[in-house]
Length: 361
Image (cartoon, rainbow, N blue to C red; front, side):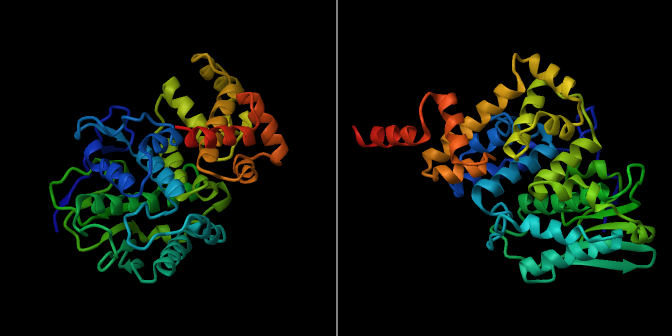
């Protein structure tokens, strides 16, 4: 089995990345699932043309996870249509709930593997102990993929699952705690570019029969703090991993990136400016200043995004009460009042005008 050092990521800021070519199959998956890419990217706070460039160009790995999060939420399948057996939205909450009771890294690994094996109905995930190593292994033999098991995107997807496992463990460790990762195993052929695994900082064992993360056995008894994990408190596993990746490799964010991240937090249910600032690792004053650079206020940004989400939901026929609840309003009246302020018309009248316009030629 070839062993090589993990390749270096392309960006000078050291952020974990994925090539545009490796992520582009997501567009075909959106089309097959009748998902609108423009809406996916907007909800993720990303540019609509993110995957339209040179296949060799790179995107942040955290952005890949944010795209997957929106595909899961809007498509109702947390497998993002990689599997022939959809995973209902809410699977993340089940796994997160089980992990919150863990006290050691070994327990986290066991509960994580057991949870996904129950969900998938087969023992694909295993915790292995060999000599001085403890490993999290994924044997995807006979997994019901919607693609060829050797398809490049399938392999990338499984490697991103390894990223998820490692980032989850990292989120549970103390701030100064380093995880003793000794090697990463992948079914990818030797010599293939694996820049999205570079930040793991461990030798890459390509051409392996299964996927795996090999840690020093000393990790087994390391205590964990589930309450402090941003991955376990996130709306979905995908979003939690994305946030954690940004914390691992902080980069100087542009104003556009700040706006995108604020919109993601609002879309995820955080409507208080202080809560959003905290989630972004900023003070309220800093957030206000960064938004001000673009001529925006938090209040206006929140109103614009909530209005866009409300109109989209009403256009799809969602009940007004359901829209109010999904957007965090206390009741239908408060939502109707806000909608009238945004649009000069009540939500019921908005829907009636839309219905009429569709009938009249």
